[in-house]
View (cartoon, rainbow, N blue to C red):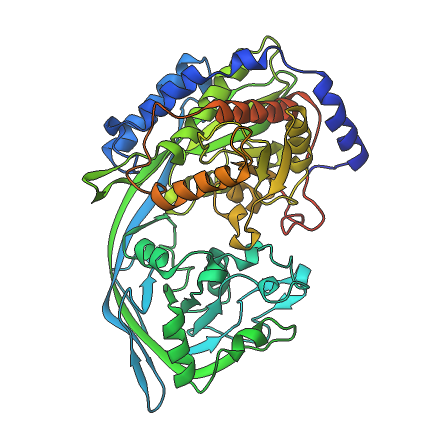
Length: 538
């Protein structure tokens, strides 16, 4: 674990900018970046889905380009790290049934509920599993909160609210800014640690920050998970969601009301047995295979054992349901731009006359769209010691909307990396701001999060919206148009009319951040209010 002296850190943050690397503008330009994006998002790459021909051509292309730059294999003698995955398609053979002693509620799959299992068993079932409402399902000692205190949920099914109590009471947790305890993935993890057999999350559009259709779409398909020695039996048998309307019917049948939600946001909340039993049977179609992270390494000089990692996920959705006759989900912005950017950054670092003191790892990871799987595998099977990993800089979707005055730090306030970003942005005449909807938990939705979970300070920047040429309203509209009409759709394609000036400026910003981290003896840590501050890097 690093020892951090705040005064020294701040002094070094101020001093490093006087040591500006040579000709940054000439090192990072549009032409190579454009070629990288065009290749990665072309139909020949078939949407870059793991386990497909698209993966084969993608990882080979990345290996070839990194070799051309003179970068070394990042995993001993290989540019690849194998990521063993399991693909599970869960379908109810017996739909979810909720019953009291004298009432019964049979639910419709996809309309009323979704459910799946991470267990690799061909058949998984719950039979008359007692249901307990556990509020937000959080165990957070640093916030003085334990929704499971005194409760034994072994064999039971827990009903859980998404988000955290701060959404209802701004004096709790971090107020409207979601902590990791509010993320739906945490709810499943904690319920499994408590021994629950089933976990059902209550969907609410505001709390989840997305509508039921997103849940329905994502859970109707097969899902990829990391392979596990125990065949994922450490997880709950059944994980799923109930729609808001279905939950209200459940509570009414149990003689309860949605007043439970308000009670759950108060200190001292006690779990509420519902007097309802849940039954369901799932058939699982299981396939195992191996995907690949791509790792390229630039060794440092006098502090080579210390490493800074740039990440961007290479995967997208491959071929899928046609929209306007197009079935290839090319993923040009998501995340062809991020991968192209770390390639351009890698090239720039190799061209420096004076090589960085610390080492750099440029890693393009698999399985982000399936649940941040490639980065999770690396974080739990690191090639370079986490205790010597200075920081992770993650790139995910760079928007071609031109130059912006602002820089969005997702999860602003988590780590000392914010200070470095802010100084680098000021040098460009720009300002930083947090994401617009911190209640959405965006810090937990891309690959940097898996590094944070193991204690490595991690950062993720989004494009700003205050367009230098067109103003903020225009910038917000452009971002909204992408999210509504192109995000995770076949129309996310490369366009020769893209305005890349903002992306180029952002890449130079990201270069300067990495340059500081690899040339100065700074050891960024976590802010005092971060939920990751007590994690020891092993």
